[in-house]
Image (cartoon, rainbow, N blue to C red; front, side, top):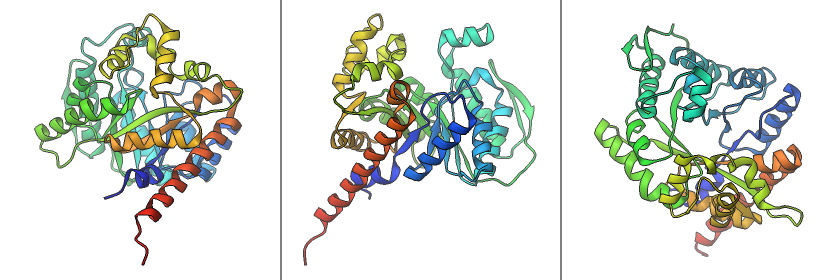
Length: 342
């Protein structure tokens, strides 16, 4: 069994920093990240350049690495088109693709479509159910309250596509854990993952008769400590909106971080103080990453968007390189300490 040190060294990924406005800059970032050697390059819901087409462009340049989405929003595309995009990315990159989806927030759904989901969980389950059948090559005849189809994808060879779903609280974990391959979490402290999400996912797997629970991939916002940096300013760039959303605040309170969604400044400070926004020297950030693996996370996704937004791409990439150097060096030292002297 791998140690937490080894999992950190081998299983840690990167979230593409920000919303690229230049295709050339985006390619330079992707190439630099590939050079760091993460497990996977993830994308959030990019709002400048369509992310599947962006990855296709990278592949055409020869930048082919495993990719995932954390997450794209279900109101934006029908499951049939989502399945088509997902398998296309897998085929073009030559790597398995993690296709992660989430229902978006209430206000976002209304702004995008003029309507809302009475049950975001039920809508997500319907979406994943259709995706699962289509990507398995099956004819899918499904009539749901939110999504329906009577269709089948024309068979095309491609690497596997794993289906992911955004998970924040145990109820969603219990619903999508029967279908999804990957549960993608954001701002979830290690104690909450271990105490709330892992049990919910395990129970869902048992109900569905699955051999194992969905893997957990957790996005962790980070920045390295430097004399000129204000961690709260950096954190505000990536979590400032989230701490004002009631469902995020509810999750954090359950995790022992008493965030008030009406107090953004106070909420951001709590996330810095509690380590949800991991800030400090490389060894501190590496230690925080290992805490997530010890809690049951299978893949930590490092998010340096705060540094990227405030200082630019190069300082963000420099932070990533230093953190990866630290977790890899630490894993090597840990294994050396375990090896008996003969």
